[in-house]
Image 1 (cartoon, rainbow, N blue to C red):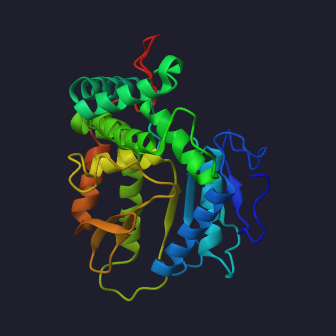
Image 2 (image 1 turned 45 degrees about the vertical axis):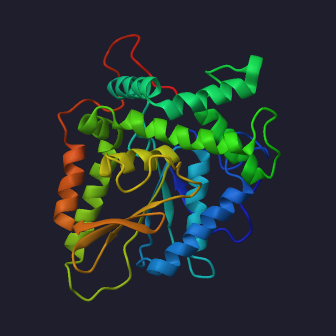
Length: 322
């Protein structure tokens, strides 16, 4: 984006190492005008579903990437569209690995590498998809550059930018690559069971458990309720995938073969009766009592401790690459 659109909510950004508000049009990895509009639409959906948060405004956190910071601001713009914005509303930029899939964490990287390798060796559909990509690219094929996720990312970017498909990729191959890339990532995350869930989503689960406990203590079940309290976390598609894997390790609730679309979301709703309702793309996935859900989150966060985000000490510690 060259400039934040007119009418954007006035928001301060606190912290961050790599955050750049603007960049030349078309720069890779940054929010587009369409992406901004998608974020605003999510904010409008939040208002329609929950109303305005209390006078303090929402707690807003983002990973340390320009497009996620701008997405958070776009969501706030839609949430407060035509309404007063609380003074001092801030986006806190989180430089820790809490909301990212930390592929530099050696134990996690080793688990992901092993899980992906097993999936590629044993899954017929995955092998067929990779073979189809190789055949389409012909002599230009490089598995390090033209993998399933690379084809998926390129196709999605071109569709939203209104650009023609890549010379070697038709629409059917786009959809094929997207489905099998999603299945591959879920298979890699699933390998290692509870340890993988802990290494990938443990810090995020701990954050969620803490916030839910605070909200529950300040608003006991069945008491008269005022405006909602809202926490908004702006992360990545893989952030959703690691949390979905932790909450739904068998893939019983959300299909493995669907990559999270742009501005997709998971909502944890603390209900008046003391239950938690988990929604993905606003569709309910599960409902359970707060105590049991917080216990589930803390179990994921509190596996035997392995330093998340820290290498094992080996000079050639594993790093997982998509």
